[in-house]
Image (cartoon, rainbow, N blue to C red; front, side, top):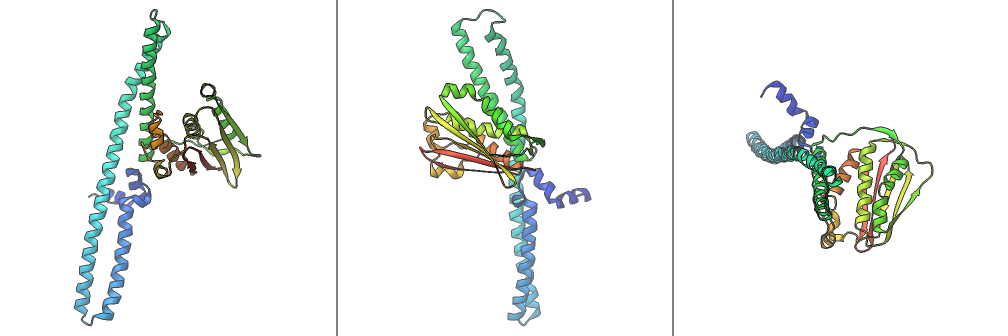
Length: 315
């Protein structure tokens, strides 16, 4: 190992970023903690041994044996975690590469469908148009899945690009709600927006906050049972802004609630209803909000609805 590589191994934060893991899961950090534990055990063992054993050689032998065993255990545990972390990193890189490679042909297919459906290349019969519409719908779903997988990969590898700027979250929420107008009309659902007073601008990433908010609203609409109302609250709480999305939809079964932010997870009652979705949306929302130093949580009751909320620091 070169001196440069050795120094890189000692840089715990850099190694954690490499694996896309939080500090407490990073193999190098675990190695450091285990090292401290071994030192404490050695000192305690020595103090106990000199009290209980008169022969100095036996004391030294006991310390050497216990230290050797602990070091071997430490190496096995940390080495196993390192292999697992490296395997996870390589898997996410592979997924990212494959997703990028799929993105271009899917985008080309989508753009090729547009002139066909518009009639620019010749007259299209109604039956043909119906089949093309089905094809376009499925292409859109594939593209959304690819985009979601790419975002998940970036979140897990710690390379999600975030650009902070000062903006009005009130304007962002209001404009985002307007984009749902066609879907709201088609679903016979209304949105009630309640705004608190004196909500300041925040310094964060407006693109990703908008994506997170729209994901929560989209879920609230999709899982609403027929005609209904979605309540959205926006207010300032201490040094944070607080956004809440409340629906009266199918809710989340208690047994499923602990898994709701995991990748690809979908609650059992949602699967029974055959509602479309990838199970990646809430994982992305949680990842984005936490990357922006915010918090997210929810309360839900099956057949009674769900309330998802997130808070973000003002500065």
